[in-house]
Image 1 (cartoon, rainbow, N blue to C red):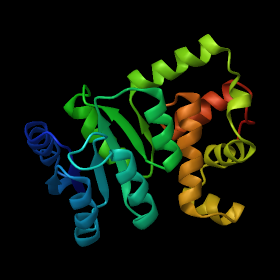
Image 2: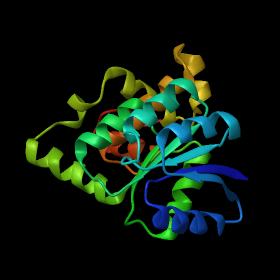
Image 3: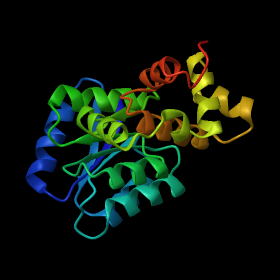
Length: 211
């Protein structure tokens, strides 16, 4: 079972999301709360696999909660579920190392699929946000080769060869968490919905060599 902690300040939306997730046969919502401080305590006590986190909470900013989760519980994956589609939020959260960003307008199957994909080690980005970032990149004339760091390109090449995050970490001599951050950043910059799509885009644009 994929054990999920749901953190959202709106009780009605929280209860509805909880019911949707619990309909999936492989997902169990172990707790649902509206405050960031309580979410941090429950993360330590319950050890969920994934924290589904809103940005706006009753007591603290969800970005600060995500930052603390990544620092104190690096094994726990984070899916942002928010009504906000601001680019600065998306980039800030992926820089912290969250594993997905989904808008609350997502359908039930999209939400369930996002949780399952993140649990399997993938990174998820809402199609609306991906399109928004792609449009901005076109309008500003930002070249993808200038967007990705050398390390991000190196990591994507290894992903394209089928290496897992742990294998990439061992090969490059860096932490698995650092690999996850590089993959997340590359996905956000390339406006990809998954790590596989990020690799394909990078190959198509000549950023990395085909495997």
